Length: 431
Image (cartoon, rainbow, N blue to C red; front, side, top):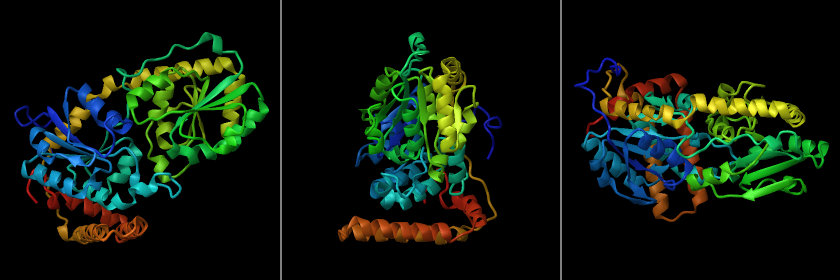
C-alpha cells in the first residue's frame, strides 16, 4: 500500500461524512470520546446510523466512511446488511473498539453481557478495512485478527473540560481527601487496593478522608466513618465531566489489577484526574507507565506496599502534592488535548477511503476453516435463539466455540490469517 506521502493530491480522497453504528448510548463516553467529539473537531459530519436496535443501513449511502463500534455486531442481521451495503457501494468500514472485550476477567461485572456477541465482534474485526484502538497494547492484540489496526488514543476534549486552579487553602489543611472515580465495572479493581486504603485510614485517623465517585464501592470501605460515597451515573459524558470538574480532592487513585484486560486500558483516567491539578497514584499498566514520570507528575504502584508508601508520602508532603499536581496539568496540556490530535481521526478515515489492496502469497484456504467455525457458531446461536433456549447455555456454547477458534491455530498461522484477510474481504468490492 502506498503511503500518504506517495499518493498524489489527485489520488487522495478525503472524508466529509461518517456514519456510526453503535450499541452504546450516543451521549456515553465510548461514543463521545472515541468517535463523535474527535470527528466533529476534525470537521467531519457524524450521522447516527442507529438508535439502539433500530438500525438504518440505508444511511451508508449518505456517508464516505462507515464506523462500526464495539459490540454493534450483536445486531447480527442489521450488521450484515450494513456491511453488504458498504461493500456494494465501495464504502470503507472502520471497526472501533476501546476495551479488550474479547478477554474480560471472569469476575468482571459485565462479562456475561458480551458472551453471546464475541464471535460477531471477531468477525467484524476480521472483515473491517481498518481497526482503531485506544492504546498500543490493545492495538497489538487486535493486529493478530487484522493487521490494519491503528492507534487513536483517548485525549482530553478541551472544549468540554476546564483546568482547575489549585486551591491554595487546601495545601496544608486536614483532612487530606483521597479521591477515586470509577463505575461498578471496576469494583474488583478498587477492592484489590482496599487493604492499603484501610491501613491509611487507620494510620491517619481523622486526618484523611476517602471520597469515592461512581459505582458502589466494597462494603468494607463504606463501614468507615471516613469514607464518603457519591453515586453518579456516567452514561452521559458531558454531564459527568461537568460534575467531576466541580469536585475537590487532594490526591487521586487509579487502581487496576494486573490482567490482560486492564493492560489494554488507555490513559483517560489520568487525563480526567490531571485537569484538577492534584497528583495521582496509578497501577503499573503500559498506558500509565508511558505517561507517568514517577515522583514528577504522579506515582505508579505495583504492590499494596507501594500503594501505601506513595499515599503516605503525598499525605505527609503538601508541597510535593502541589508540585506533582502542577506537573500533571502540564503533561495533559502539552501532549493530550483533543484539539492537538483530532486530525488523527481524519487521517485514519482518509486512509480507509484510499486503502489499496495488497497482493499476498498466502492462500485463502488458511483462513477458511476459522471463518467456517465462526459461521457455524453464529448459525447455532441463531438456532438456539429461535428455540428460546436459556441464555446461560448460549453463553457457554459461544465461549466453547471461541476457545476452539483461538486454540486451533498457532501464532504463526494467526499472522498468515491476517495477510489473506483482504483477499476474502476486498476493500470496496462485493463479496
